[in-house]
Length: 470
Image (cartoon, rainbow, N blue to C red; front, side, top):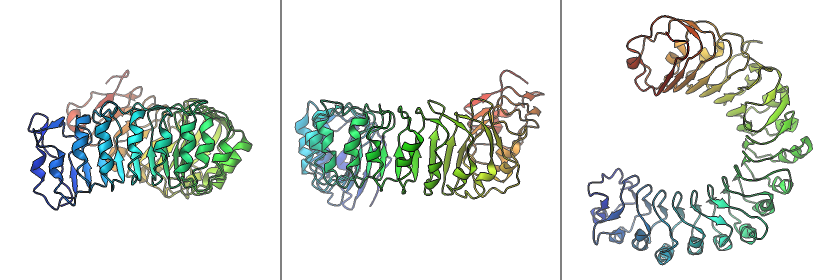
């Protein structure tokens, strides 16, 4: 038996663990989201000790506290344990957590969304078989005790996001030991307070494939050249910091020949798009620019984008681009699922009709707000059938409401057509269950709103018709 899940909580928050002891072949036990906060008297998880094949136990998103830890120590066959989203602290009952050192086979441990502080780290350091560890969204601070955690030399994935960590002067010793994680392939340090001083330690992680440093205090270019010498990086997220590389410094980033995902949104980049980006021919997600803090300008050179034929998602929105960008640039991008060229100004014109082209892709997301379209809804959309979100707002579009968009895209959840000049009657003939958000405000529709609109859009959460009412 692999899974036992969806256990209904009928004991007022208390779990009768012995119910599962009869399932001698049980390998996976999922009790997540059960709202349990304890167990019936003498019926703790030690009662599962007879389940010699139990390898995966998921207790995430309940209300268990530290009292659960000693009873888990008996489950020595476990390879995966999730305690995410509970009320664990580990700071006052560390003797309970230390008993988990008997889990010699444990390879995956998820402690995210709890209340652990740095005092739990020495106990974790005794779990020598760990390959995947998540401590995301706890109350870890500074860098104390991390030198002990970084002795887990089998770790392949480490998530420390959403804490209060830093590696500033005087607190740097712990993170210098990162170099000991020679097998580490995935590292998430997002939503902390790191700055450039940690970069030399990161550069020493030669097996690293995925690195997220978003929402920290990085700035400038200091030490990044060392990081960019890592030729195994496949995914790099530097979003929402204070970067501003020169064109010459971008050359170092463009040396990451295996890069598949690049996110630089919400920084202080300015000037033209770096031409060297066209060298990243494996790039799947080009998320260079965002409305928050980037100020790229000039033309979006078609040669730069057309060479990146592996792209799945491209966002160049909310910058200071000007000139003309034609969708024929995407004529060979058969993998594209998401395009965002929205603008805050009126200088960039997006041309979707000429020269003539045939769409090779099926989009899920299209965002062209304020893109100076040719007053008509792009014709290539008639060939799209997988759209989930469309934003064509503020383009002076004319004509009737495009019911065919809903008919052709049965999973369309978000349709934004506000601030245009669409007219006629807004009438739906068929039920559209997927639709959740629809904004058609500031258009020229007339007539009465059909009485059965609620039946046509049964799952709609937001409908905006203001201020031009029917």
